[in-house]
Image 1: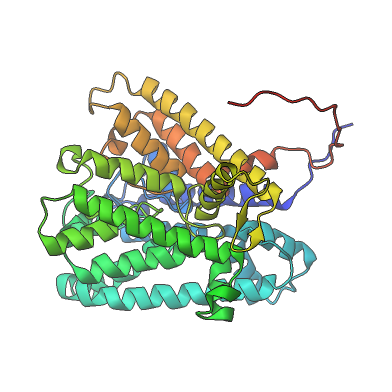
Image 2: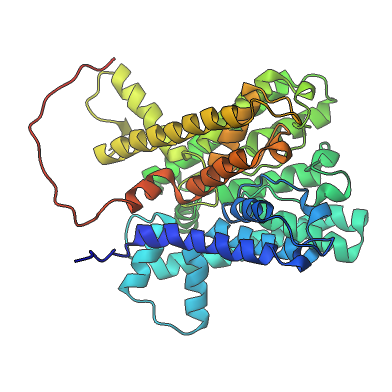
Length: 448
């Protein structure tokens, strides 16, 4: 007798993103999606759909010069769906259709945003939708002050909306190919409107919906915040200030004003937006230290329950605190007068282990696939940068993405998908939830 596969919230989340990718690929395969009105190659459409749905930003073709307005709108809708979450969009459609939100729907939504409890899910989801609309609209209005004078009313407003949504969702897609293909925001490296608005949208989108809720309820009273919010805010601040200073010291050839703005932008964007104001495509134009800092930031990413990817700030903070507890001889991980659950510490270690395993395998595979690449001189730095950009759903590249073989494109597409749904979530979706737990005899092993 064939066993029936149970549809768990984790499996629905994994399949939901897969369905979004399939729909996006089909739409991008339509001739109307390209400017030449010709059917895009299947792998190009699939890779772009994965990158947009998983809010990454790695592209095989420049978004403005290759895709038509229809194709760009499809990409934008995929970004929005992937950014706020597949189940959040479904929830909005349920609400518009007058469907009653029952326990099952709340459970699915809880898994989608990684909520700690079922209570308040309807209110939280409504806040996510409203907050997204407010921040993206506000960002677009500010960006209009730069793009309308540059491109006219129609195109300026369209570019502003596209960039605002992409920045808030930490996607990294842009339409600046109108200036130069694959140029990202390098034309605005000294522009305060762009270099401040875009990072602020990235930060807000990457803080996480639970942090929003905490800030909304407790305002500026730091003591009232949950431990999660405290860790996210402090870690986020540290990952902005310290890398900004380091990049400022490294990129010492720029004028002072541009150097300050570019350093701030380059410290925020790798977590995990994928825009750049420094010309990364030519690795000789930026310092090695900046490249290494960028890889480290892509690895950490944003915060849990947000539009960002990476291992997440709370995971990073938990592991750092675990190390500090070890040095202090503590048996538990403590912070702000609270003890972090041992399951949280264990899950953090498991997640980072799985994350690094996938990244290592991908680095090996891409290195094998690209060892005879006649179009691009691939180095280990290029491969490592590309892999962490994909699995961290960042979208930055040193320039090798358009020259990859099909095998490498498939590897990166899988990494982007795993990075968005979560490596640990994907592994849990393969587990049989009804499998009986068996407790085996304990035996210690030597560590270190």
